[in-house]
Image (tube, rainbow, N blue to C red; front, side, top):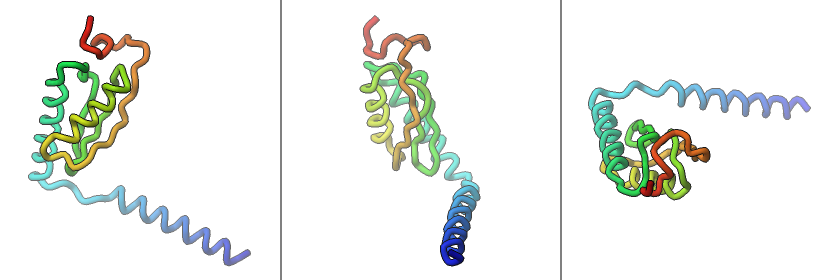
Amino acid sequence: MRLERKVGACAILASVAALVACASSPPKSPEQERADAATAERVYTALEANPIYYFRDVEVSVDYGVAHLSGYVWTTDALYRAQEIASRVPGVTGVRDTMELERQGNRGGGDGTGSN
């Protein structure tokens, strides 16, 4: 029984140490800040250039080349298209998506299909 407790305690300590290490990453260099800001702007531009879907409620941030998409879209197709568009932008090394489907259609921007 004591061995099981020691193993469990070690596992908990290892998990906590891993979380602390991830949370205390070194600050970005000015060059990385500029690169991420430029990449985020390119992602916004690419999303806004899409003639089919309304992406104005999608927010973009970039961290070390990984584009984080959040906010709202109106269809599943729009959600997947936003991911695809972001992944093709120069400087994007990955895409993380926390977008939500707006099912009520009350956030403005139409139904996302390009028709009125």
